[in-house]
Amino acid sequence: MDEPQGRSSIFGRLQSLSDPTRVRLLRLLEREALTVGELVRIVRLPQSTVSRHLKVLHEGGFVAKRQEGTASWFRMEALPAEARDLWTLVRDATSEADADDLRRLETVVALREVDSARFFERVGGGWDVLRRQLYGDDFTLHALLALLPPGLTVADLGCGTGQALAALAPHVRRAIGVDRESAMLDAATHRLAGVDNVELRRGGLDALPLADAEVDAALCMLVLHHVDPLPPVFAEVARVLTPGGRCVVLDMVAHDQVEYRETMGHKHLGFSAEAIAAWTEGAGLRVATHRTLPPAADALGPPLFVAILERAYSSV
Image 1: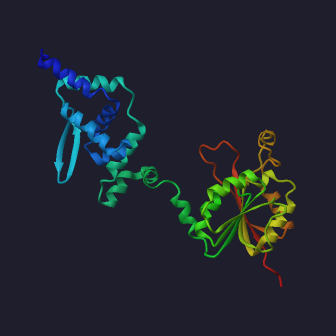
Image 2: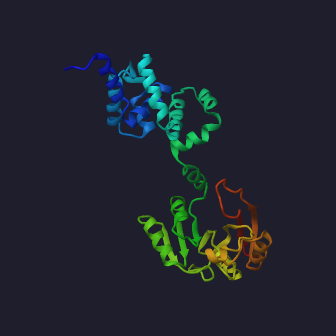
């Protein structure tokens, strides 16, 4: 025997709202009219999945569809009281809208703007977030690295797993990674497989496996606090740099986190600007720049500094 029409209607609507993905889509369509393609970008699901759920919502009377040229737009219907009460109950009884969905919704809507002036006025301070969503975080680094003069040979002293070498390789003639730990070099070898202009060498910073004046520039990032004594290190840096060559040192400023000696094997609790200047001067280097970096909002360690050391030209 067939169900009465009213009972059939409520059961059909209950079925429409019984799937979490459909509830997720309705939360978005309650806020904004969207195309299938826009919904796919927001919820990060296959188009076939989104279309299948939209069909159920459309047949259940929760979603209206309108055609504009080749695009189909979907929006929550102006619901009758019974359906509105049911949707409100389901919406309020389930978790809040996914924050990532709402951020991506803002991005999708903002991208509809054709007039760039209006677009940037609308986005305002949210441009950094939008740009990160669209393009990621790496492009700024690669743009800055493209400023390097062509033909450089660069060494990463204490290269670790080769992260900096991977970023440098497309922008220099040759890159050399030096590390004393086999495990680090193994990881770097794996990361840099197929990169033809990078060479890895095993050795310590106090006896670098590099020829005299072999490199135009060097990096020494978060390594010096593991090495003692330091005067031989700076002497080696001066030896392997070409005249006028530069070494970028990035490390921790002097701090009082004494537990780092035990937990991470640190030989030094950071460095003062005066200590760096004294060690480099004795090695034939000069400190061209020294500045403390602003701490990252989520950083737990001590502040960092960056110093640029220059090898003097021959006096002859």
